[in-house]
Length: 432
Ligand code: S3P
Image 1 (tube, rainbow, N blue to C red):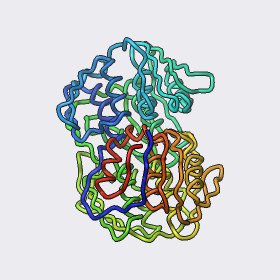
Image 2: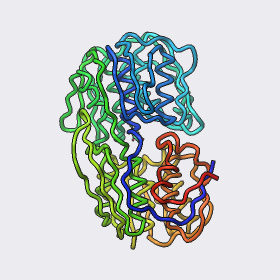
Image 3: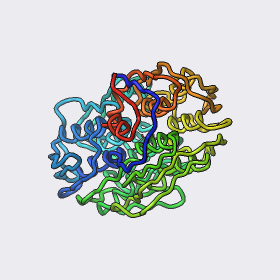
């Protein structure tokens, strides 16, 4: 599937975005191993989370869809998962695979985790190393990529782990294994990463301490099912924010967006480029902070992006590259090495797409230098990466001619209905 984008602008509107992907995955996994039932609303019905749901169902968990975005999960408790009768295919989802490896390392049965072409080329050594230190038995392909063969029936013990790279997925894999381990597990993160796992574990009754960059939990704590209202995904809202900033005289209100401080780096970077973005009506959905985001079309200036913000905006750099390309002057990005091992090599993918649209961008090993300019029409490749596809779609709305964005099927992994959402706001985006 491709998108054909004709130059166009958003008009004033109020909108929402689908539920948070990270929180939806965690609701499924933690709800499954909790005691009692959990009611989830605002769930992201995207391909990634549906793969997690199917995997939990394959292990005997009853999950019922009770509305378009609501689910009831009948938790089976810490010892209630059953051996799946087939390999668990987690599609495009790194979060599903890494978190589930932590969960499955502690089960009494063997399991195999696999995925699509992108996922089966992503590094899993980063979870195999700490989980093996906890006593897990996990085999991957010789280059550390999936499929993962996880042997059951081992006893895990708590460890202290210093994360070599800031990664919420690795932190969460170790914490989930730690729930089943003997003794205490602690993880030190070199930079703050999203803390949805810690917050949801607490909502389900576990004691999890976070202090000075170290998260600790004791093994053997039972979880209790609860009600989870999933906020809108700030990572998806970013594309609406970007489209609004690039529009003419437009103001958009995006309601009910998660604004957990471990995720809001993108807002800080855009604001320092001159973006007119305000948070309104701050409130809580359970343990997660939520707000409405008001954004107005803005003139952006290039900046040096502080590498300290990287882990707080890790998924938003494709969109930030587009903002930089539309800004006046030069924007320098550094500290983005992790982007090379996401759903695609996002530095290379965005450099390729922006160059094809006539933007002057130099790739560096861990970032890029982007010189603002005008986008020409043309044809670009999304490299089957949802966030690259959506970022280039927003760039295309201000191009001087029509843009064809190739291979956009995976947009459905995180933002089902993206093309309808942006078309309702005024963008001329069609499925080609
Ligand atoms: C996620 C963590 C991030 C992010 C991913 C979702 C999560 O990955 O890029 O989209 O839900 O924990 P890393 O933790 O590997 O940086």
